[in-house]
Length: 229
Image (cartoon, rainbow, N blue to C red; front, top):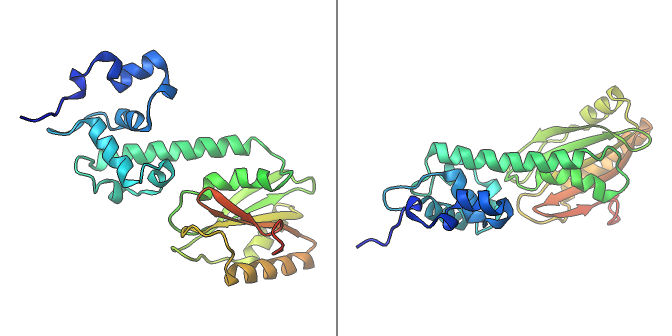
C-alpha cells in the first residue's frame, strides 16, 4: 500500500497555506513556500514532494534555484511548463525586489554601495554579463545599464560605447562590473586588459573609472580595493 497522503488530507496546522495564514510567511520552510507556488502534486507525489525534489536539484540552495532555467526545472517528474514558469517568475520577483532596495540608495559612497546595486543583477546568472554605472561628480547614480551579455566565460566590451554614453549622460565618473559564472572572483588577463584600456581611454576624456567589480555568486572582488586599478 502506498504511503502517499495528499496535502488536502493533512492536519490544518501542517498545510503550507494555512500555516502561512496562521503564523506568517517567515514560519514556513523553503520547501513549504515552494509548495505554495507548485500548488498541486501528481497522482503519487504531493506538491511538497515536488518542492523537495526541486530544491534537491538546486542542492537546497535558493541562489542555485534562481539560476535554473525552464528546461532544467522541467527535468523533475511532475514539474511541467506552468509550474516551471511560476517558480522562475517568483525567483525573478525576488531579484527585482533586491535590486529595487539597492537602487533606493542613489549615492555610491563606497564599494559596498556599488556591490549592492550590481549583486542582484549578476549573482544568479549562468552566463557572463557586463554592466556600467554612470555617476555624477557627487557619485550619485545617473543610470546603471547592461552593456553586453555573452557566453559562459566571456562577453564583448565596447569601450567606445561606454565613453560615448558617459558623455551623453554627462557622467564624469563610472563603475563597471561583470560576473564570473564559474565562481572564481580572480580577474582574468582579459579583465585586466579591458580595465587598463578603459581607464586610459577614459582619462583622455576627463572621465574617471572608479572601480571594476567582479561578482561570483555571493562573492565579489573590487579591482580598486585589491590594487588592480
